[in-house]
Image (cartoon, rainbow over all chains, first blue to last red; front, side, top):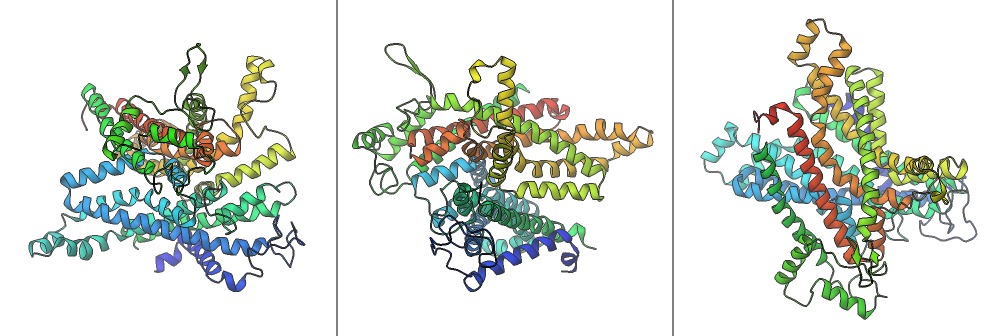
Length: 272
Length: 339
């Protein structure tokens, strides 16, 4: 814990993420307006005390929309990475524990998935389904589990030969309990680090998809689609383009700093 | 080396089969079948084009046969014709009875995407090697820290946002650079040097945007690799021999740190190809990424399936070239001392 507090990377990332988290949670309380309320009398107002980040082309309050957008980006990040980590841990555990042909099949599957350009894969799936926030979370999750699988497998490979694991196996513990009790807890560090970094990528992918109009659909506010709406007005309403981009930048930076910081902090080599 | 090559090439066959399976699975994700009303297939599509789609993918036959026919298509590289773009062939040109040639959509757009990505890879590697080496040599100084912060920010910047801002700043307010397409009007009348400069100007923004996010990973990789190598015995030996520090860093250490990057090029291809969707759609560049995006919007399924498959095949070829390049460049691998 002490090293965590002393690590500037981890701490700055942690503070950023905590802030985004709090903002997203209390969005309904602090949002001054209904994010979808259209007010044709206040179209494209520049930032002021009434509208902290101005209003958009439909007179909606950008600040309120940004607050609700934070919820979307958090939700997508956590759910997508949750799905990816779940699949990755299960497949990685099976491959790393049983080895042999099971391992070969799973790893070849990983290789194949890695050779399909991810963004193409995501877009193709969305073309066949319909874009919605749930589909997007699921699709991002289903296309980003390969890294975790490789990590967990590699950890298991090295842990599998440790004496305490062999001892537990000799004493007749079943495989499931060896994996849950001994192997997984000792592989947590890389899993956590890669999940945090994964959230950063998921947030970027979601905002990119929403920007292209294939992500979160109007009128629900997402940072990506606020930016798309603002694109039309970039010449005379800079606030519509500036704030959502900055929000994405800061959030993604936060997750990356936290992830890299955690990697340093949790690395046993760095103790003391 | 020959045995390695043959093994490596044969290895692509199961990979291709896997890719065909996954793309087949995606095609069948749509509720009902891809042509039914419940699916997202463009509701304005005529009964005729629905029928064509059914024929193209043999949707009336049993699943196993459908897959077999799909695999056959991939092997023959026949992806049918586009629905949206006047029945143009998806992949390669076609001659009709009167001898007119219709170019394939991928045939026209792929070279553009390849050019942008190869330029991008070149820029990413040049800058990353410089930044990474500098960071490692000045470890834990303000130089190291600012480079690290810079690459973190470069990774976190959403490309489409920066593209928008740069477009506005360099193209609209100041008119320094063209902001869409690949050629200015009147391109045909320019001298070949003028054409080259014109093309270059059009490429500055899209190539910079698509390279930016790749900087972080690779420069951190170079930095850590360099730090590792600078602490190895042969470097200490070189130092104790009294070699100049510059020579040690740039000749002895850098050579070893760069070698593994060849494999990284291969691994970064799918990300770059996929990333071209955003850069190309924003700057209206008629490459494969924009073609893919347009096809998704229009639910032009033959083109979507074609690009998905060709994109994966490109990745496989890229990985193959990278592995061969690595084997060729590393004397330990070349002489069969390690696997």
